[in-house]
Image (cartoon, rainbow, N blue to C red; front, side, top):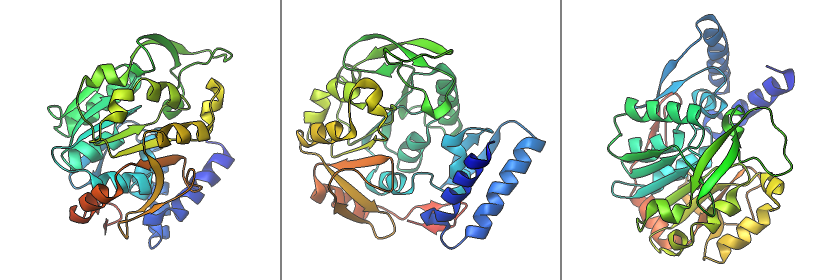
Amino acid sequence: MKYSSVIHTLNFIVSHPLNSHRKYHALLDYLKWQIGSRLVPGEVLFDWVEGVKLIVRTGETGLTQNVYCGLQEFYEMGYVLNVLSKGDLFVDIGANSGAYTLLACGVCHANGYAIEPIPTSFIRLQTNIRLNNIVQQVKALNIGISSQEGELWFTDSEDTMNHVISGSESTKSMIKVNVATLDKILDGESPSLIKIDVEGFEMSVLNGASRVLNNKRLHSLIIELNCSGARYGFKDKDVIGFMESYGFYTYHYNPFERKLRRIEGKNTYSDNALFIRNEEMVMRNIIKAPKRTIKNNNIKI
């Protein structure tokens, strides 16, 4: 691990909202993981949130930060835990190993679609779904999402950073993947919340989801916006403008206070943007949601 990467990770851990009163213990968790995963390499079963477990491996940055911090993406994961309930439909596009799916379907008991194009990540996703006995709740699909059906080339050796290869991009490791539109996959089903993590390919995903976006039962989307759209000719503000055309606006959510605050543009503290269309309905869901206990922090949100 590079020195700069270690410093970045340590800064992330000590500044994480769930570690504000346990910085020492959080750093100890990090040290234990780094030593233990090298002495005894392989899979580790991590007891995460309210009985939901994760299988974590060395180098899985999308999961190991949950070990150090409780919820890697605190504000967005906290929102999922507070807004979803049994009977809702959650769609996880770019599910990777399934952290968001496990929160939505394992903790909140929603039904779900977990969509992951990279076969190696999809295998890990299926393993975590089976481990938590939510196979009947979750439709796991090894496919990509785009604006039209067909095939696309993806990188397959960049862990959580795997993405559709753009025309000007050069890579040594890639894989051809079948892709479909979200409208086609859902075929009339009505999600409440969609999470999109596709490393810049957001506009293509959204352009194939007009029927889904027009469905008024959809109240929220969590979309990663980290300027990666530039590789496909889009800017983050293009996604924000597109979402506003469907009546969705960006918000900040504080899980500790269970409060929403509308903002202009995307968040400055996160690579994720929370889009909400019906604030009143969302707040009703949040107010009635039970407290959730984050295991290793022993904190309720």
